[in-house]
Image (cartoon, rainbow, N blue to C red; front, side):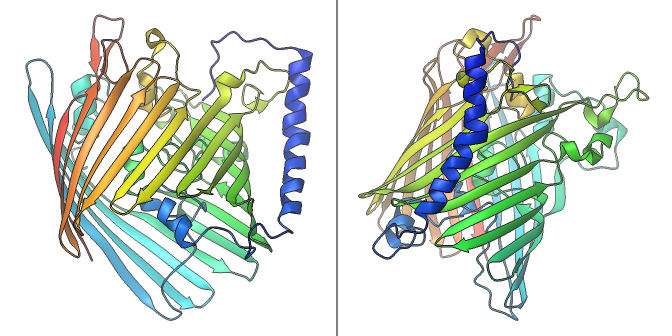
Length: 488
């Protein structure tokens, strides 16, 4: 997200550097990497992807249930030609939230049913669909949360639409196909699309649906898109992505969405060199920033659409060094004037860089992860925090520097205990969580969790913000949860 209220220094020298980076250095690096692809990067000349060492450190490349996102869309299928497969899961979770003030405790529940299907009529064509049913009640329902905070702009939404359910939804989340034409693949439909390889925060994931970090860990939301991929050989791939839905639109049908300039797109070159998988990318991210529905609530005849386009360069890499897995992912926004690139515009690296760098290690029953995060949308001082960025989904963090830590241990063959924490290094607040999971049967598991925000007054994970109007906003609370899940 661009910031317009910061004072930066710009000179002809700075502009020359930016032109050099975007128009000369990046194409040069692409040519060098393509040249390196001609030489074997290991004894076998193959990528680490799919090897036991790589999988042990990182899980399978493209495992979207774990937050990993190698390819933009998964292309492999275990279904043979002429076969059909149906599978999925049912999950119910009960949550108790400990509030401040008069209401000490609030409760809620969430039930989710996801049915997945794969069809492979012939060897070169695979179609996939995922049906999602979800019910959210009490404290876990977004409308309940927003109304209790007094920040929901659609206060009359439920009263004006009594025929609609605001507790449950049923939708086709994914519906897409992939066609293999030798060295060329094309995927199309409503795709589960996610870019990047970092574990918690993906700076290059700017084309798919915008969801919270918590939701990203569960499933990758579908987005209408076309994704052609060319495989020139030696482990290289050139991938294009054209997306037909902008971020921030929700369920509105807007006039500006028909403008080709508001179509998000991306170009990615992926390869392997020196023991690491990597990708270089160029993206246009598009956000709808206007009024809900595109018209003023006070005057429904007055259009109020607004769009924001931002261009990014991205880089990500993943590999291993001895027993540890390493990854780095970063994006840099191009200098802009309005919604167009302008290399004479003010540009400050600290304001346009997003970065995640991490290390993973697994040995026997133990697993450890650590990730450093730099967020350009954040602030160095807690006095400048804007909680509206979190509520709108435009940012995941209020500060600049973060450290994410995760550890897990399996006791015996099944019982797993994990602990995670994210620390805002600017104000030294933190959000901590502990979870225990036990699979009573092969396809039935029970988990219990506890999360707790900690921090001094005014810090991000203290969660209490003064809106300057005499009202206070309280976004963070301790929670406990119990979840039942069966797969089929």
